[in-house]
Image (cartoon, rainbow, N blue to C red):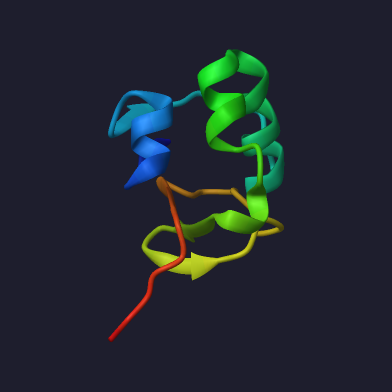
Length: 81
């Protein structure tokens, strides 16, 4: 699946996106897998409450299933004005 990173998440991970092969069944499990990869991912996902996630371009939560998902995006909360 394609995993995309935006704003400070991208800065910490060091790339805008990547193709990820995963056995994760939920977004939370995917985050656990990414965090275990190396310190830059651990830094990006250190506080999941500071992140939002979209699954196939739909705002979701960390318990969202990943079955048949093609894209997961992580980004900080959006603000409007």
